[in-house]
Length: 166
Image 1 (cartoon, rainbow, N blue to C red):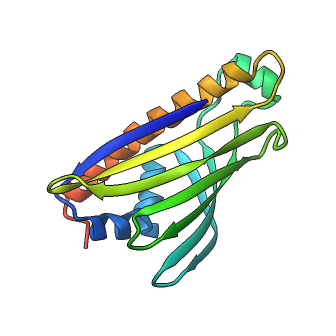
Image 2: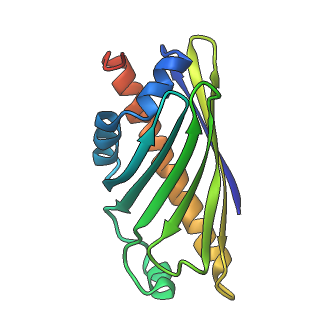
């Protein structure tokens, strides 16, 4: 199941947003706000590229029908990001802690000028290969992603408005 989430952040430049997006203090505050446990596993960066691996665990239980299918009430995943500075685009993939051979999630993200701000677009593809219920689980995951990105966008704009961007 394909998805796209798009948000515009006002009063920030591309260079500032790019720096903010990968700032650890910001990311830790953001995850706390959207109720995600977050552990930085790996961060390799230079002036041109960043490769980051983060383990994320939503601090909420999944609906009972999905939990029964997956055999757990919570899902944790490891996010892998590769990004080229100045190109304003990157790739992401996540690896679920459950049924890793049956769940495939990956996509791209990009930043672009939005006239006095920045547009962030995240495209993704979620595939759950569980006979008869894969589509149900995909819809749950996409809905959760969309809700999380909306909450994250609200927090990000507040962070920008508070002047916490350098």
